[in-house]
Figure 1 (cartoon, rainbow, N blue to C red):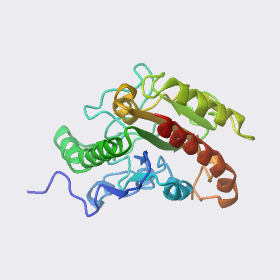
Figure 2: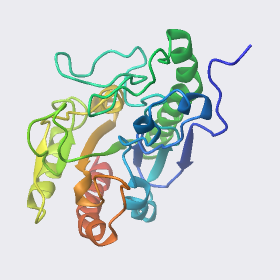
Figure 3: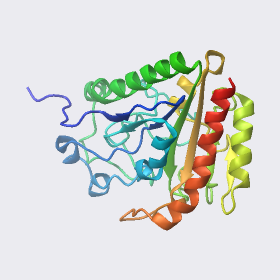
Figure 4: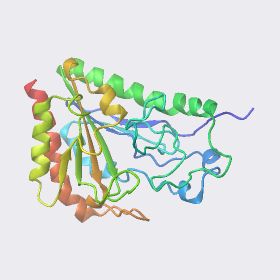
Length: 272
């Protein structure tokens, strides 16, 4: 019998740091197992909707002592920032699902009749989604035990213009705290102040992107875990169209802003 799902890659890459900060990158993976890739459209196989190059952009965070958790598989295989039951994060608005069937441009991901059925979705969840979240939860528990508090930074990026999800151009720095439920309000306001003061970038708190499943599920400030999502415009550091190239000069300009935001998270953790 052909397996419902198999892969040759581990579900994540993990670096354990020494500071009370964990950076999660659930959408940086690009791997699509061949048995799935052959069922995708030509556009689907190009994995356009990846959060490209974030491990390079955030590489400096290792020197800050941050732990870093990176997905290996494409969000087209399974989206690690969706609830395991596939429930919508934004009821009434257009969203992509746990195992997406379409792209951000609303085009089909799969060839006709090749979409995954529930048994395959369950197999993908067990093989990829569960191990990533097990690692995320265990590292947050380790950090909190060692430091008394943990800050979770969920790192994302997206094209600055995606009409399916928002009108016009997205602000460059979109901070999300689940409308204030996932972290201490004082930390959220400090982060917003830093982002708004950054020359050349626009910023908003709990705008179109308020935080996905990771931010909402793990952010429990009353238990000492503070979660923040940052959704960045990709034009801040890379090309937004094929071949999605990394732009070092542009990235170099935004990295100090990211560094200041992470510094504020660490300073907050030390005060707790």
